[in-house]
Image (cartoon, rainbow, N blue to C red; front, side, top):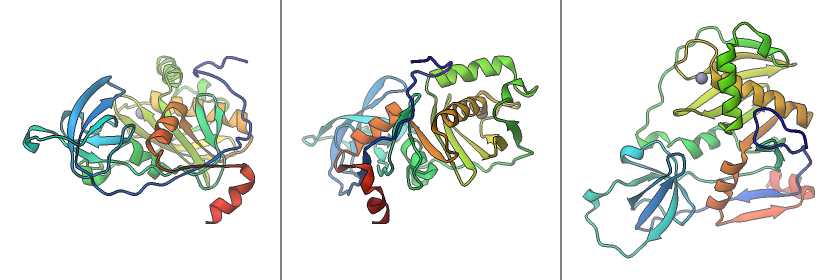
Length: 273
Ligand SMILES: [Zn+2]
């Protein structure tokens, strides 16, 4: 197997035979939960009175870890506490996944029309507006435009930034990337999550924007271009959704209450339901 610069592992795209549908209903059950934050490798205890949590669930919390997604490690229903002593669980994203996925590089990739859309993915990593995080208003100038095959030679691409972008790919920081109806969306994990938007048509990426404060063409955008180029090389179609494999399986485990695996022939039936 050939090693591709900037990715953790390589696998050829081959049609997967599994279709996954996950649904979950909620009724709050009070609990005291310990939550692990994998990115920072730490664990804290929170009071939960808003959700029915189980081990493996993805949650967002109040306090100093606000905005970090955490994984519920243990759930304790027998407790007597003063709620004022504890920060709380404030969001538990609904895990709903549809699509047929196959491993490509370090991603799970689907070429289905109905799959994990950008809004759904955003809910996995960033708490919803009622979690107290405000969406900033952006002002945009002219976006960047690149021929995807030759972007690395462009004077706008700084070699030091390029090198950081390759590190980002190696570290699996482009956690989500989708292209649908020529509209591209990516989420890149830097010091915080950054969304990258662009249009893709006939080998050209246009109107590319990242929401990070860097003044030039940033490492997040370059990492997205590298990832886009390498995935398109392997799948032979121009519309797809790619999710970091580790995150994909974390979400599968988190939504384990109902997981249905069906062979590919049933794809049409599931979509039309
Ligand atoms: Zn950026």
